[in-house]
Image: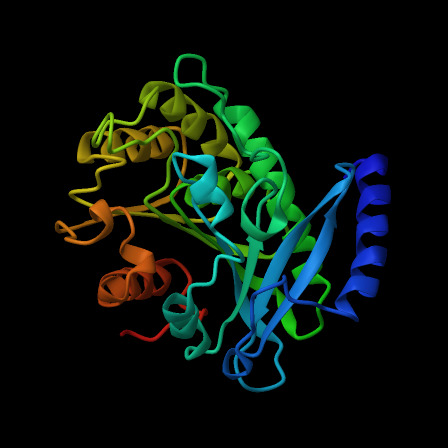
Length: 300
């Protein structure tokens, strides 16, 4: 870790201690006591901006294993603003009832965190910069990770990166930075550049993103679950296989799971749809049982 990053982290954690003592909820939103839900604002080191983080804890005193849950992105700015705090009660409940805490950051430029534009924008399909997008997202995720690892009731040595769509992409890129204690990555429909209205199943610049996945694979020391539905209108089967195979050929470890066509949310939102719970929980159980049997995750 560089001296600048160490100074930035110390300053961020110092401010976080102040913020954490007076957690607040964005105007118009409420928290759910049954989920032990708490909301914090964390400064992103060196950016002059912050991110909103929602934390959920299961019953008990901990230290709990935990996941860092990362949201996707939408084709238009207004939809990204509507993300709010990215509350997914059904998904969160599945982790809480298995004894896991859930930490949900909202990246800069989205929902409750605000900002003029997403910090993880890749630019245009004609000239995409996926590396820049990954770096912007990873900075926000590392801010939330550093905060979570400082919490005494969260186990700093047992946690997962979990992401949907652009959040899955962000999770894979962040794993390449080898954050301490990371056990695995669960990437649900990971990718960028998809638009079912204009390119159903065929995201733009898929080969360039395949190159990026290949470039980060050697630096990822934990297994990655790549989970898609066969009928994903953002990322179709051909691209799903391309990205995973390029990742694996470059040294990445993990497995690709493709479930049968999912009739809701264009096949892209299995993990966030209540109907998808039996599908993704079964895949996660089998994946963790194979790669990290020490981590608790019961079948559906």
